[in-house]
Structure formats: C-alpha cells, structure tokens
Length: 112
Image 1 (cartoon, rainbow, N blue to C red):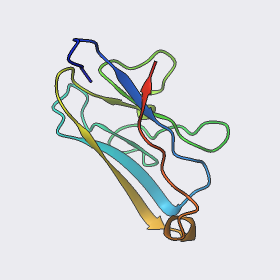
Image 2 (cartoon, rainbow, N blue to C red):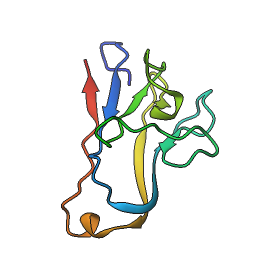
Image 3 (tube, rainbow, N blue to C red):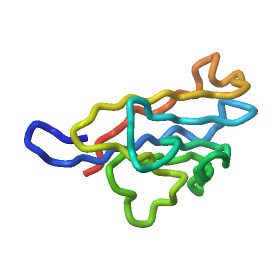
Image 4 (tube, rainbow, N blue to C red):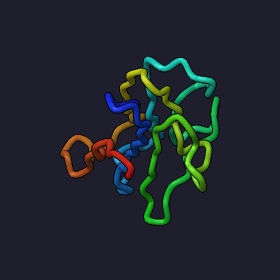
C-alpha cells in the first residue's frame, strides 16, 4: 500500500500449517482493480495457480504491487499503490481446530 510519505509497501500473511479445513481455502483481496486477473491465493488451482505451501506445511501469501523475487504466482496477490484493499479468508469444510480456536490465521504483516 502507499503511505502518506509516498512509499510503496509490501505485506504478507502466514497462516499456520496445521490445517483447519478439509476441502481447501482461499484468501481474496477485495476492492482491487489490477492487471492481475482474479486477485486471490489459495489451495485451488482455478482460475489462478494454487498457492504452494512452505516446507513446514504453512503457506505464505504476499500482497504488493509487484510480485516479489522468488515468490510463485499463486502466493502473491497484486495491490495497487494509493488504493485501499481488504482480505477475506474462506475455509471450505472447516475442521475442529478452527472451531475450538487451536488454529488461528496470522495477522497481515508489513514486509521490511
């Protein structure tokens, strides 16, 4: 996102790897009109590539105007400088760890 100082910032989300869903997940970014069709990241490979999990089973999703070096397309959601956005986390067939709150999604963090 673009701050008052005019800097472009990148962010990331890093939900834990112990699965809280049985049928998949998706993180979408709303209020975006970007060149990236379907600004989303998740376990489903259509209409954009599926996010690739990290070696520990977690998945890191990056938000920013440009795809970071070394980050796969499925793990990046494009944002537009100067425009606001928000995210939606959708879990398909949530499992017990979601309901008993032993699995919690991470906060979206500023990447420095």
